[in-house]
Image (cartoon, rainbow, N blue to C red; front, side, top):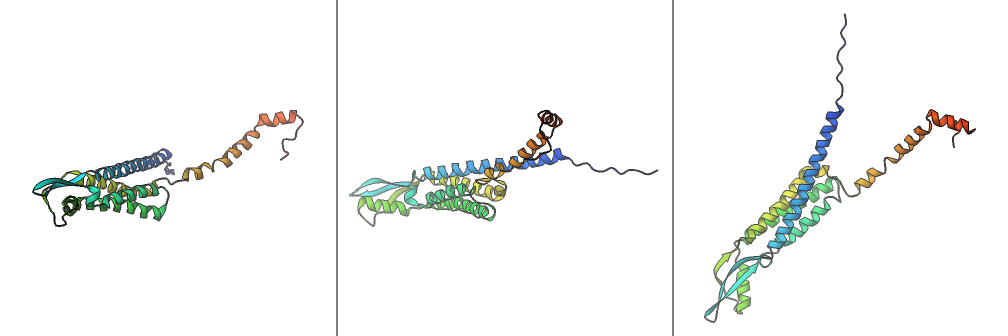
Length: 220
């Protein structure tokens, strides 16, 4: 007596579930990268306008307060935050290798801005320059020098840009590109034509054509 071997049946639902999970994961990573990149750049641009260092300079036997904001200490974080924003937008305008390169630029912008902010947290050259400008003495120096937490806030914002770049490097290949939806929207038209032609071959349509004295087999 022969035995019939069981043939494995494909599981389309499982396949669709796996594809849906991939799409869902891509959307989540896309939303996270956009949020992190935009938030990080905003934090960097705002915090570099705050006071990073302050102290006093001696003038005529007295002391005047001296302070320097982040842009005076270093302009690198601001410039790289703008580059990061441009790269974040450009990620959706390119594909394949171009997207990988832009994602790498986004990550490097965040890393560079963070490093510059950390170095600026202990910088006193900008404050000495500001003291020389206020007092008119090129040899003036600052006393009671203190640094505010704003450089570290700037560095934290830059690390968010770095995280957005790393997400783009990891998941960017599955993200949509500009104009992709228009390419997909053009394909369903032949299917609609085929369905219309199939509908015209229904038996009731053929009988109606015969009743009108028309030849249903005649092609236009």
